[in-house]
Image 1 (cartoon, rainbow, N blue to C red):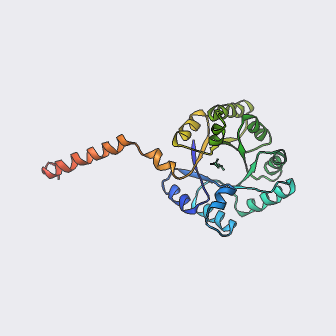
Image 2: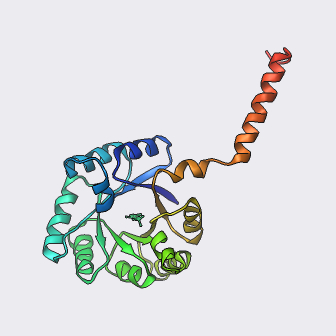
Amino acid sequence: MELFIDTADLDEVRRAVALGVISGCTTNPKLAAAAEPGSFRTRVEAILASCPGPVSVEVLAEAPDEMLAEATEYASWDPRVVIKVAMSLGGLEIISKLERERDIRVNVTCMMSSNQAAMALMAGATYVSLFVGRINDLGYDAGAVIGETAEYIERGGFDARIIAGSMRQVSDIQRSFLAGAHIVTTPYRFLPQMVHHPRTAETIAEFSRAWDEARRRGGLV
Ligand code: E4P
């Protein structure tokens, strides 16, 4: 059970990592495009310097040979770079080549079904990313898709891990872990929500009041 930070924003990465609960980072072209302008390589290297664990970087090319070249370039930046390949027929070929011939770790992304996940697993993927929010948006049950994929990993004896992404609300994190996700990748905004509980805040305040009152009464020195 692990949490990754889902962002290309360096400030979010640093604030999340400072909490001590983050063990990786996932970026995608939309997140990278939303971050401050500048060299993409510099940004990825800054994320690598701020965040422990694997950092997923997505290839945008569509032709297999161009995907391979782009992936090999990103992987050359740091051994912790994991190549994100979106599920497609052309992508399958690349997943297998990267994992089995070039010893480069792949995170298969943009997946919405356990059939897609099954293909990614059989192509040798290290990570299979299921987009919880986008699956639920279509009226499907993302928890069931995660559960089926977890069963495939179990039955097939695959050395792979499920990343649940596309979090829309804090309860998606809980449901994804309970459905069998090994990793949840989340935007920063849900981390304080995971920590906060009104009853906890109330109890801390009550304890502190009791302590202060005792001190005022000179009961505690
Ligand atoms: C993670 O790897 C994904 O790229 C990300 O969670 C997608 O989130 P979205 O569906 O909100 O774009």
